[in-house]
Length: 269
Image (cartoon, rainbow, N blue to C red; front, side, top):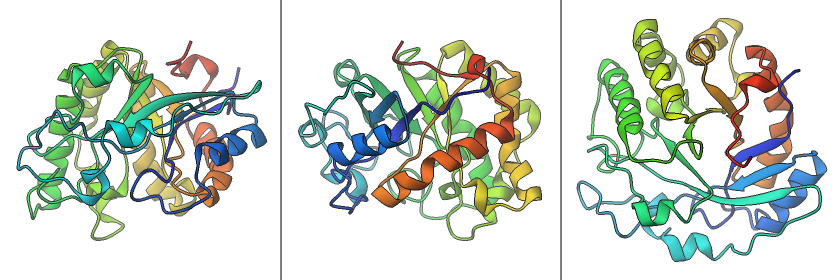
C-alpha cells in the first residue's frame, strides 16, 4: 500500500521566535490538520534546555528564550476526534556535538527531532567560516554524533537531512556538499539510523529543484530506504501559508521515493 499522507511531525507555532504568523497557534495548526485529513500531528517548537550550557555559552535568537516554560505554554494542546495532537520539540546540536536537551526533559517529550544541517549559526553550531569540503565532513560528523547520543529509540527524528542551511550562502552549495559525501559513508550512517530506530524526516522543497538537482537531493533518502530506514513527513511549517502548501509537497516527496506504508516511521503507535 502506498505511503499515506496522514501526519505531520514537524510543525512550529508562533512560540518559535522564527515563526511570526499570529495565526500559527495550536488551534490554527489543528485546523490545518483536520482540513487535510491528518490523523497525527506534532508540535515541535525550537528549544534549548537551560540545564545544558552550549559549548561557547552562546545561543542564537532562535533558541535564546525558548526554554521549557516557553514551549510548554502551548499546553494543553487542542484535540479532535479526527486528529491527535502530540507535544514534542526541535532541539539543537552545538558545535561540540552536544545536544541541548537534558535526559529529564527528553522524558517529558512525546517526540524529539534534532537537525544536523543547521550550519548557519556561527558560535552555536559552526565556527565562523568553513569551506564546502569542511561542511561535508562536518555533516558526517554531526550525523554520526547524533547516532551516538542518548536519545530514545522509536521517538527520535532526524530533521531535514538535505536542508540548504548546511551551506547557506549560495543555493547550489548544499547540493555540492551532498555530492561530496560518498555512498559508502551514507550507507554506514543510515544502517546506524535503522539500528537506533530513529526516523528520517522527509522535508525538502521538491518544487525548487531541476530534475538533475532533485536526484542529488534524493540520493541520501534512497540509500536510507535501501538500509531499511523508516520515514516521516515534516512540513517545518512556521506559518499558515506554509501549512497550506505542505500536503502537495508531501505527495511529491512520497512519489519521488516510491514509498509504501512499510516505510513509515510510527512514533505514536
